[in-house]
Length: 100
Image (cartoon, helix red, strand yellow):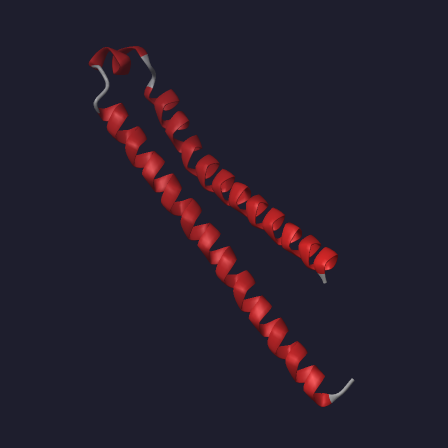
């Protein structure tokens, strides 16, 4: 392997690593942002709820339901976005193989 080919491969690997890191951080921040928005809407609806709801429902059940929303939304957002990008990457690779 020649020196120039090694340099090109190192640059390619560095760019690929930076793009992967950027994708991971964007998924994390996107999932967090989506969870915060859902959590805020949930709290607003809960606070605007009728008083008899709070009389009939134990506070532990309310807190448990609210605490399950945050990780569910953030994990599902990241998983769904990741699957879409992997599919896109796969299709681009298949297209380059067929046309290449």
